[in-house]
Image (cartoon, rainbow, N blue to C red; front, side, top):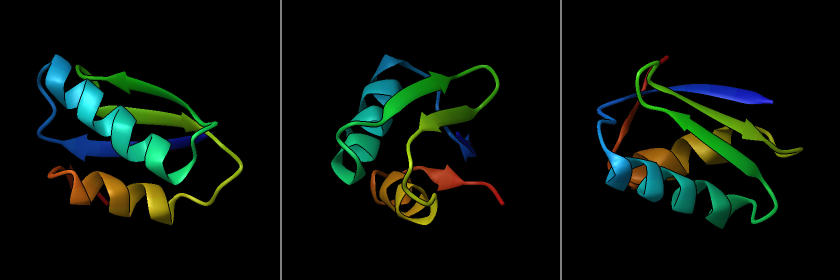
Length: 64
């Protein structure tokens, strides 16, 4: 399980965009986006670096 802090998420469009970005990296991943906590939780066997890059390419800032 990966937990990635993301800055700038605020709406349903953000959730959809981040889910789509993550699923491009691993189509079998389970993705949960928590807007209030500013977190994306990803259940995948992949390492988290490609997920971080995909989220940033979708236009969001990954913290840390």
